[in-house]
Image 1: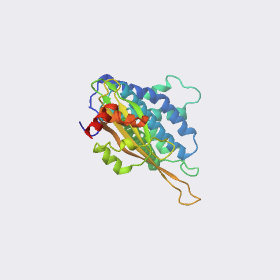
Image 2: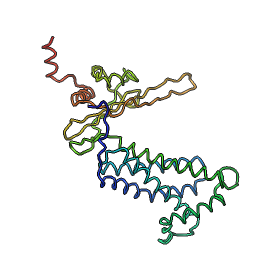
Image 3: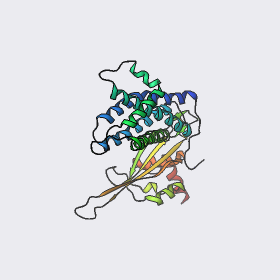
Image 4: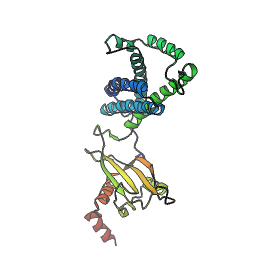
Length: 299
């Protein structure tokens, strides 16, 4: 068994179509909302944030569709994210042009522009020469400067959308034997008596002897968190992801404490026995009677 879980790479045409359909269906309203915000939001920083959120939403929608379609291939997820994000970016430009040119309500004829990429490109070239909103003062941004801004926008939407679709697909393991996604069966939070690289190395070495000494705590305080994913059907596939939150105390009475969150490992394969041990510790239950009796006999 590999140390870390990896997707099998399997997929079906139906699953890919489900991801594409989900992303494209979400892209229409999201693209309209994004183009509306680009025009009406007066602050450049908020426009930049809206670009990031637009890309995240497109990638998330595509990823959820792929998960529903049971796709377990990161390359397919990346390709789907790329295609949907590119379409969403194009749709946002079309809606942006329509909102600049159409007065009043839209008609179906206006939306025919979505199917005319050559016309869209021609209009965009004209806008590039005339200019649009200014980055400073009252002068319109045009030419090379506008091209650079549009290029950054395109790279952000496509790049973040692609990576988000892949990240959504990699969030949970998939049990190929039972043909189902594993659910997070437990979120276990302990005091950080052991943390950092030491904790990672011991878990990778399958040394779970320290786990029974961990003390449950709240996520409000410094902690290490175990996210245990298990197949609810066969219980043979189990993985843990571990994050730590450390609090750095304030250096002076005028400064504030800082929280440092770090992912130590993601989807480490564990055996059913190791998963059961982690659950028992979280519940505050000691060794099972059979194990305790065998240890006493050995003594």
